[in-house]
Length: 405
Image (cartoon, rainbow, N blue to C red):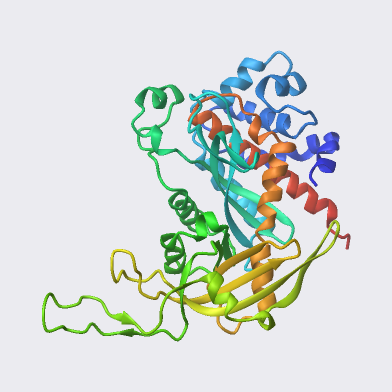
């Protein structure tokens, strides 16, 4: 946990300014350079509430308005700050054995005027609720995650609501986009900054989207994603016959397949019980984490359209089934090479858990969900400063745990 690092405020104060120096160079004016370290200190300092007023009381008494102006109304772009964050994160956990984890995290929010607020699924509450939803990208190695991108998802209802858009300060160029499109844009930005990672991971909210998977493949990336039990697939051996020209009517445009589609649940059931192997992927706080896994090569039904409802076979990939001890069953797709060991696939799939840990710590310990403003700009200012604070604490954690020579 990061809390033990936070408690040592005297040592934090000693080197935070030096660590923040590259970030401060990216701010445009001196007041922003002055208040950025104060805001980060407010996030890091002990205290239950991390909204502006209680933070100011702790780290800048009598300066509430200045701190509020810095985060909510000062016109500084987040992109230059994020560039430095990517450099810092890559230096700490980047590499071929690292993972780029795509997810989203919700912030419960009452009312209807805060940017992007909508009645939608809120993971923090585990149900539909009024909240803001942020698409999240986390760079992780082992048990060390560092969030490096947080972008607000704008529901479609906001596109034409000019009154709410103006009040929330949403830029004209920002329109509704599916979360998977936001995630792909962030992955491309992260790659353009030469951040090192070996694979992209995502849950079924993203993995169910064929366009998302295809885009990752086109970028030459290794990926492992969750899918629903009803995802349709073909056997690996399926072939597509050439279109048959009939004696009457229009000539056929698409071929026919030599095998029928079926759900991934049915494909796994056909393998039988012997296909499953018990695998331990790591040790948790309550003991070894164990589940039963089976994997088979299939072709996803996400190729060219044969009819308005039927897709021809797509690429050959691994279908993985996970049966947990509590009875829950999960399905995954991955484009790992055919020769890969199942233990390696499982280790990759299960690496996704660390982003959930990061989201929880950013909320509980750094106040990601404590921002009380309504503006698009203010929320992204708060989010990027929270990521900067989190990255700093991870750097401290790694340096304190580093074995002495």
